[in-house]
Amino acid sequence: MAETLERPATLADWARRARFATASMSRLAWYGAHRYASRRIDQRIGEDYPDFRISAPEGPVPSERRILSDIARLQTADLANVEAGHYPMPAREADGLAGLIKRARAYYADLPDTAHRRRRAPETETASNEPYYLQHFHFQADGWMSEVSAELYEFQVEVLFNGATAAMRRQGLVPLSRLVRERDQRKLQYANIACRTGNMLREITRAFPRLPTIGFDVSEPYLRYGRKLTGRRRDRRLAAALAEALPLADESLDAASVVYLFHELPPEVRRAAAGELGRVLKPGGLLVFIDTLQMDDEPDYDGLLEFFPQLFLEPYYEGFVREDLDALFAPHELKREEA
Image (tube, rainbow, N blue to C red; front, side, top):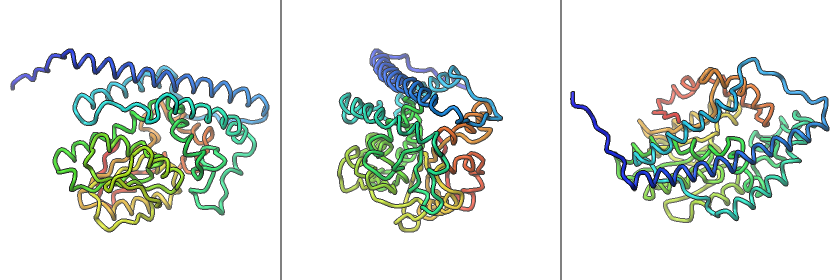
């Protein structure tokens, strides 16, 4: 059996790795600092609510060192995917440093109100007589349905995950890259379900510029924000739709992705959305599924999964982390790629 020899790294390789490391470390430091500051603000506000309690988890909670170690492994995988040609080097912020500062100011203006709502009466934040998507997810007073929420969403998520969210999403480009390599991307049809503010679509259109894409989301303000990121072209569309009622013909998609959606769906809607994905994907179609860990995926994180719905209003999260995803998708015979 012949031995496979790796190509020695060139000066261009080292320069690319240096650029990647500089950008990644800057991003992690930026959002990590905001995460630390957010905790301090939240703790100070918490002193006004001495009777507020969060239930202690039964499972283990990972140490900060373990979390940072896992983020480091993610960055290594991200660079490896770039060097393997699955997607290009991560892009800078679409609106640069000025945009980051603007969103940081909006984030801190909203943070105290969010901290107070978390402690006052969490049960009042979800109204049983409203559709699930109109509830106040994440203790935002307007949930997903406003320009303010659209402006804050990506920044909030990045702070929560120490600046690693974009890299986590990019792992979903790897199976798409394999599909595109085998086919003429211009003849494929791809949809991003629950595209939020369009950041996944931006990554996809950078990696596969000739791939026709459509993004669906329930929030018109989020879609308007997404159009600024993805640009306007005939083969790039964004439209309002629910995951459980997609305005697509049967077997019309070669590939679809759902990113951080299913943990925010009620059980019956999860089943309906899985059925819709099975309906609109072609036989053998590709589903890229990116979501939170589930119980026992990484036992060291189980306690954190118990904490999460208490810290961030997620009324359907506890059910999702115990959902049998293989059973959920099995009736639809999907080729599912998890990232």
